[in-house]
Image 1 (cartoon, rainbow, N blue to C red):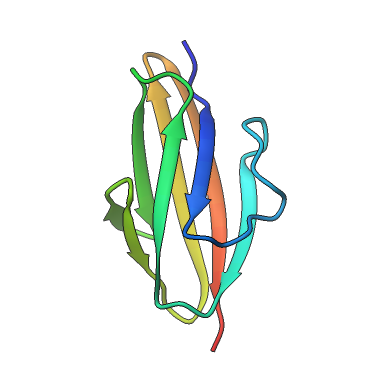
Image 2 (tube, helix red, strand yellow):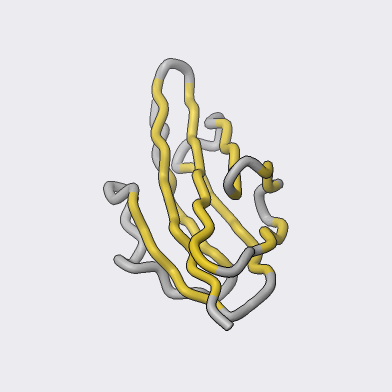
Length: 93
């Protein structure tokens, strides 16, 4: 039972470091008002939830950024297994 992601994208923004299922902390920068957040679980039975700060984001839809740092938490649950991936998206401009 896997609680890992096989893919994570924030629009076309490059993640730093590049996505790796074993890495759970990322950063990205944008001047966009929104970007689509898409998280793909390794196991299709896993449940994926996404929060932008305290705001839920439906997988595959846009998150709205405020100026400065935005913390996106992607939680993957599969039975008793759980993994949390964090992306700090910094909006400039």
